[in-house]
Image 1 (cartoon, helix red, strand yellow):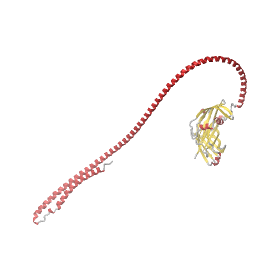
Image 2: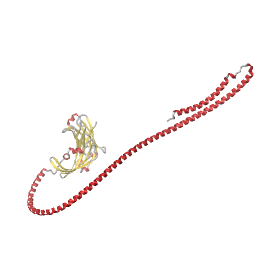
Image 3: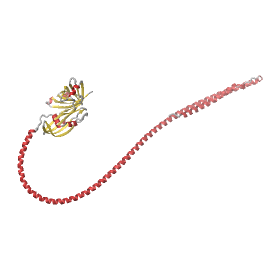
Image 4: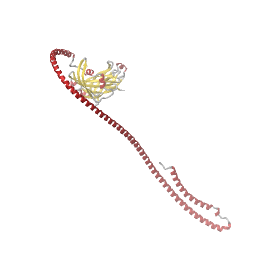
Length: 461
């Protein structure tokens, strides 16, 4: 902020006024000299006064010298006074600048104070609001406490009423004991009568025991018939067949949720009866669903089970799928080469699913709809190494779906001895996704199933 205009104007006028006064005094002295030099009264042209004219001229010459000296002295004084006034003006300007700086500082400090006042005002408003809320909470708490006290008093009154009722019931019970004692005496008489009847019934029991021998023979014959129907050992029963017999489509939907990645495996227990190929079998299995992935159109996972099937130990691994297959008629509308990227889980077969190890992997497939072929590869998500090649396989239709089925070639030190098959189905409208499984065996382990995998992949733009 600057000094007000009136203040600065007044200071300038004061300085200029002092300067003007000094200059006016010097000018008046010079004017007086000029008027003395040019006055006609100082010239005498009368002939009879020549000596007087000479003296007058001498006097005039002396007067002129004196006046010139005085004028020079006055001019020097005026010049000194002007310098003093200029110095005083500079001093006033310096003071004005200094006061302007101080005024700026004061005004800045005033702004800071105003900001502090605004901040304090905001805090005061906040504290007032907090105080209002606390007062409301206190009132609510007091009201709640009073309600609880009223409820406790009501409960106490109810308890006293219950106690009175119990005392009445106790009196009634004592009366009942008296009545029951009398009834006991009467019952003992009846027991003696029943003992007589028992002896008579004993004879009938002997007759029934004889009849039971005949019934046991009939039961044995029926058991033989049941054994002929019942298959105690379902040899060669596939895990997928058993899976479809144990779980409904709704149960499988609850296990696999679209568009998520399940980072953990979970376990559950199932016990009961299942019907496989028309045969009812008792089952007691512990199931494990391994970590899986899915997209909006398909989901796939590997399930393992171990336990008792028809009384015998049983272990199996099978893939789970969920999704809507692409209609077979859509194959004619598909063209070009399309890339599908996705995820899957490879499970290494163990003695029981909870002991089995699993590996997450990435899968990439290239579908050539012009030539109706597909191929791909899977890569370990942890080591980033190539695990298997999905060999070139035909794309075809089956049961109103678009499917594929081919062989795999193991890669790397760990899977180079693995051979097996992969198969899958296109999912969603326009084959937007696909889901598949891989089964491999290790040639060095006598052909036993070594791994079971399930995967899903989504069409890339």
